Image (cartoon, rainbow, N blue to C red; front, side, top):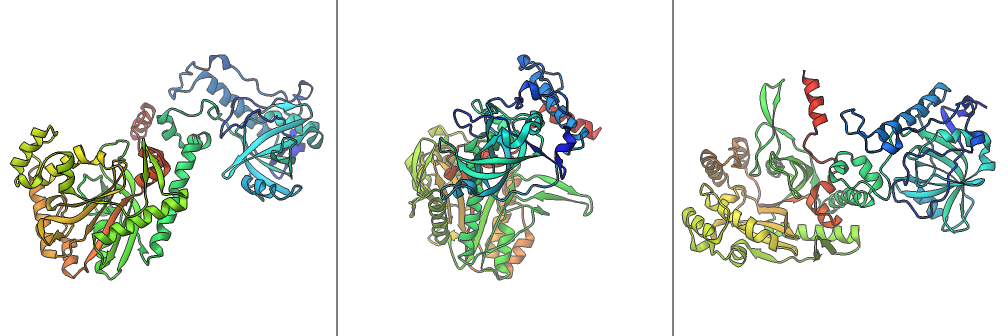
Length: 567
């Protein structure tokens, strides 16, 4: 019989010849380069012999392709490609247009808690050991919901299907039609009648037991990371559920979600350096936003009393375990609120997210057990610096004296820093890492906070807090400045700092001042780092582990490709 005789609607109906692995294989393969070889008496049909794998003993030898590919990987690719081309030559598309699953793997397992014998069709990737056991075969199929075992009797699929399956490899996508049952070992399974090839995998996946451990490769090839590393998959899916929860939380409190410009003619709302681009049509420079704040506050002026946005910010700054040049922020603003309103909003949001997503308010952050339950303590910044840096800020009322005190304490600070920036440096070097349990650090120097309202009893400080968990900043919030004259003076002070060399000083935004002059209600506002909250709830310590495709330094091959494109 020829392969053409097996074609059905552009797909391939095949028999699975594999055995049940002795232990479950989580999201990977013991031998990813192995195809399932039928018995020698059936290794040839209309397709001819199976492609022979070459060079496997030289698995560490580079092929010289310039892409870091080993000889084994090159040979494996060639074998799989040859199998796909043989299918095409026989008139069968190895990538048919459609699949028609009726159930997910998880749904099949749920059905089997009640009864057996249901007709089901599932679709997913072949995983696990691919071995035969006499006239019966076992393999696991993995989809987005989990895994389910496939059991295929040789008598059911026939000898022709048995031979055809010799062209399949682990990692191929298939559709399985059959009936549900439990094996003698009690494992939920599908007794397959028809198995259809959906997509031929031309490259193998990392081995299950060795996994994908190289962090650089995990981030560059996230699709592999999601397949073989269950912890990565769980953390990234939790992040998706987190953003959905935050939206529900704010929507239930009558906040309105909006979208504001990412490309802006003038950046602002934070102290940071922007990415700059050029509009050919407008013939002007534009900036990727560094904050959502100033546009959202324009909406308060416009009469939207509760507003929020979840969006990307971009800051042309360094990379670290806690910093990414592209990251996701929630910013929310509430008319007739203040910074205490935002504290309560944040505490309820974080505690609620933990209870819904984790079933508990207790999490593990690094080496620390942390309880996210509200209320969180409120620690004045002045008190924190005195406690941990052993410097009484009020005893050093000018920049020069505070600089001398900081240097005497051993702080790494520049003499060019303003008094507010010196205080900020002391917080970063002596306070941040000590705030392990959820804590609001409250009341900041006015020259660090050009968009926040002054404290009535101490105009050198503003009503601002930053929230910390596990020694890292999670959120930043103000009682929002709505006095246009004070705002103008703050922007002017920022320009003076810029003239003295502070490249992160905020630019003067005349349009925003004009908007304030039309009147903005008293309000509270907050910015929450979605990535950092996902780190806390997911129990990970690197921001790249909660960003699907984090920014990375270009490889040599990527730089070469860029050079070729520009030449």
